[in-house]
Image (cartoon, rainbow, N blue to C red; front, top):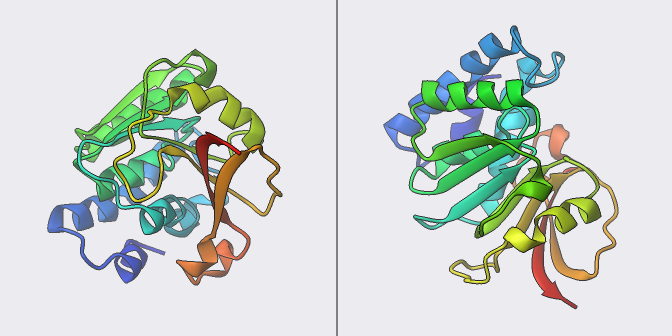
Length: 207
């Protein structure tokens, strides 16, 4: 699978974005030979299982320019790196506690000329500062994740949905005392991989 799958679902990309999506797969294949950024069995399906999965967030919300995004537990740079290509006027701060992964992600961002990406080796609980949205993808259970990052969510809403957490996960049930919306990713993409995948939007408003 190659970058054509991205154009299938996002047909208004600039020539620069198209080139970046063409380059991202080979860059990850090269890095994955040095460090296990994604599962070895997934690397041949990176456009579906990692890049397009990350871009499901773009189907829910088109981030406005100057939006501040925190990607917690980014691992190999997902969902932050693909979204940084999709939204070049948005600031993405990618963090992970594993130094070798975050250094690789920084090199990948530089290889793709993503000037809107910054990285840090830091645990989520130690993060300071406010962000419009906090992203995560199967980092830990959702309740723990929300408790880690709820203090980092800005109260100044500028989008069609309230500021909060955007969390990618499987079919796990959700029991949280906060307002949330569940999006079935199969509604956006028709590949069987997405059949049980969910995007959860959590706000900081207590019910």
